Amino acid sequence: MASSLYLPSSLQKSSSLTTPSFISSSHCSSLFSSRVSMVSTDSRTKIFPQSSLEIAWYMGLELGKINIKRFADGEIYVQLQESVRGCDVYLLQPTCPPANENLMELLIMIDACRRASAKNITAVIPYFGYARADRKTQGRESIAAKLVANLITEAGANRVLACDIHSGQSMGYFDIPVDHLYCQPVILDYLASKTICSNDLVVVSPDVGGVARARAFAKKLSDAPLAIVDKRRQGHNVAEVMNLIGDVKGKVAVMVDDMIDTAGTIAKGAALLHQEGAREVYACCTHAVFSPPAIERLSGGLFQEVIITNTIPVAEKNYFPQLTVLSVANLLGETIWRVHDDCSVSSIFQ
Image 1: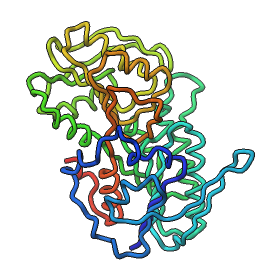
Image 2 (image 1 turned 45 degrees about the vertical axis):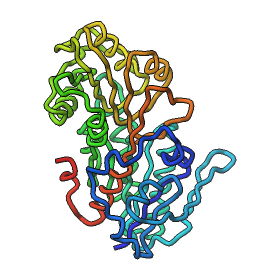
Image 3 (image 1 turned 45 degrees about the horizontal axis):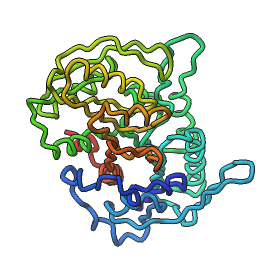
């Protein structure tokens, strides 16, 4: 069975291979076994294009050719420059800022593959944008997560592979199979390398909605105790910390969230933890959206370290001394292989 992996031009400038601040994928090498020799002789197995080198190296595949350009008025043009007829195609595209541009690019790539007679099309979306609009909390609101799911399905995708979706219910918006990846193993492996005494650790959820995520993280981190920051959100991207549930005095607090956007929630939470006597505060998240003024808040001295993954390319201007970026290339590569071979994906996280 042939397979292909595409990655559009929008990510080529932010390859983790050319950014010295990225942590090597060897940090998660203990989680996944190498399968490089598996299809190295399959001439119909392809990866597209340059910025997916890390995943290509893990999978033992060569990069293919795809042409993506803009017309003068901003319209997107996509042409596959290799045959994908009868192939299993994997389109790698996070719907990160500029979200609308990247989403439209993904839809057009899916359409191009469908019209080129690809056998199966899998949209690999490391960061699924619009996932926060997953329900109606007020009158006359849209549920954009459902709309985007419909667009991806109608464009011709047969399967979606996404990392740490904001809420699990969003998977139900798709009428096609969804493989949900958790990037916690990559972050946990890195934290284990720091040899922090387990008796000093406390895992903190920055809000009540993230308790389940933090509890699962704490269980795998030597069953560390759990604390919860109680906050009241007054509007989008505006948060106010109210209280702390749990004991952090003299502890190393590890705050866990799925994304950091403006960093208002996690920065105010960190300030509260310091007030309550935490010795050090670490911030861990999968998706680094980093909308202004996130960098000012994160680099202001509240955090010992801010640990993120490269599901969203980090602009050079957004790097600061406390930032650590972990690669999820092995995680994505192993998952793609398992999907391609009809093997279990959930067993990776057990």
